[in-house]
Image (cartoon, rainbow, N blue to C red; front, side, top):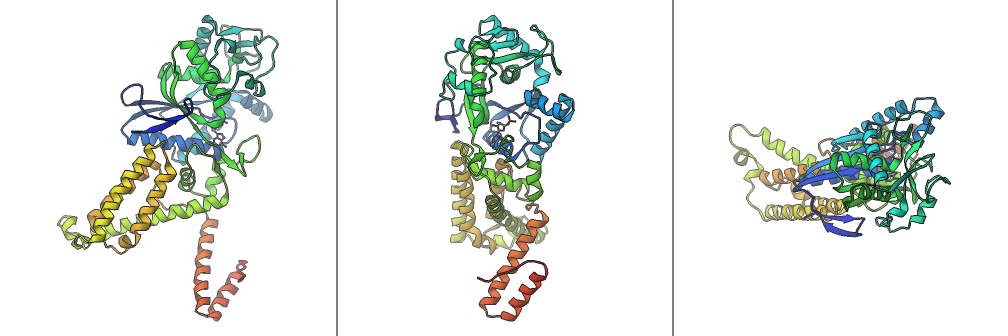
Length: 477
Ligand code: AMP
């Protein structure tokens, strides 16, 4: 039984899709006006793992994401670069999709562009107008917030808090907090509508898209924490008013921020690292491991040091997996005809106490791993179980003190983990040159330390002097 923390009820609830084992999952996609940064990546990797795990648990997942390809930010950027806004949006959408592919985020079934759903947006606005939830002015069509008393139920905030958000003051509106469903505009790009030319507001694109593919009610809606208020509140107000059905979404899931020195990584603060930049130094798996090491709802503080730690930890899993493969390969090459069970040198190992203990530990680890993942996708706990297992069995396994059957079972389990978490254990992290150099220097320093312990001053001085020639200064303190 999977338990999911639901932002709406502020509690963990047993997950049960609305219809049999079909999960309709929607996650707010990016506004494509610039390169995506690793804060975005944190959110999308988290939902990738959630989708993977739901599938692993036997659910059939329809994962939908929108692409905001029309927005004030896109237009502003296009004006500054002299590009056509739609061309600019397409360029950054392609880059986003490429970044996601490189990061192994591959479970989205469909990306829906806002500009390709103008018809659905207009239909939903018409429904809201007819039902008295919206009204038209000289500047646009607005949602009348006073008609929806539940506004704020997701965030536990008040309607008045909307005033600090980007809601343009407009004396033609009934309430200052009313938000735009349609903006009457002349400058391109614009679309025709019953209210003249213009473009849609931001919130309505998501509900028009989800209604089109999922209907008025569905299972999971996700996004970063910053979207709860007002974006997701506005979505609920629109959809529940238009359809008269509640709740629009059964489980609301929100990811914590990726922070830098305690502040959210964001374009506006200028404290961001693009996904592309990060991947010149670290492999996608190292970054994914870094994301997995923290629960998806908690904030993650980004730093080079933590990424280094992730790199080292991941290496331990790679090495362990490599040993499993080596043990199985040794056996494969020793086979001629008979089944591995009879020919393998390790299979001649009698059922020792160690072997039985490792089999038992494997079963226990598997059970606890699933238990952790069932508990609101607790990846840090799941990972720590893997390391406990490696620590407890490493020596026996390295020395081949277990039967081939057990090695195979362990490898099978690690393959499953690899699928669930989206980590590829068969490919070693692709180090940048700089990274490899660091590791080689670490090895040399280690050897030199040992030489010094043995009081081999001559050789240790020679190493230091050779490193000096390469501008690597070693100081013994
Ligand atoms: P945007 O394109 O700004 O709408 O962001 C797309 C998604 O990335 C949203 O779900 C945001 O909440 C999420 N996001 C943006 N910045 C961060 C961050 N620093 N940490 C985690 N998620 C983020």
